[in-house]
Amino acid sequence: MLESEIGVMYDKVITEYGSQNKTIVNPVRLVNLSTYDAVTRGMADNSIIVQVVEEKARELVSDGAEVIVVGCGLYAPVCTLNGFVKLGGDVPIVDP
Image (cartoon, rainbow, N blue to C red; front, side):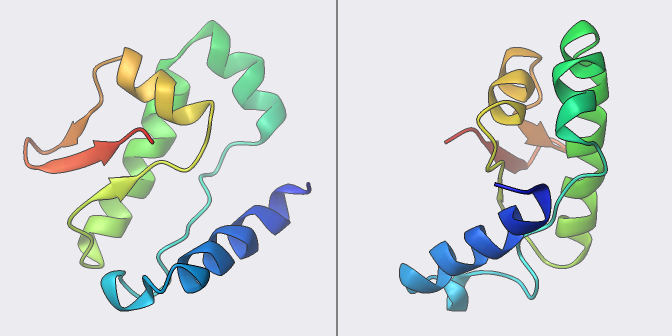
């Protein structure tokens, strides 16, 4: 799957589960890190992944999000293993 298709896929999942009334406008947002950079530089230095997720989480919270679900099988566990499980002490960062 192309990176550009990932957001569309998650938008479809939100709609299929009937959750669109529980999300902010434009709830699916991609981080500014390619998959290649995530598995090379990000695995060598996990702070790179945590930083891009935190930046996107702050953007989502400023748009009204109360919970952040990291929808990536790489980024979510990296955040959890590095202790990034809450933003600002009160917004949960969920590792599904």
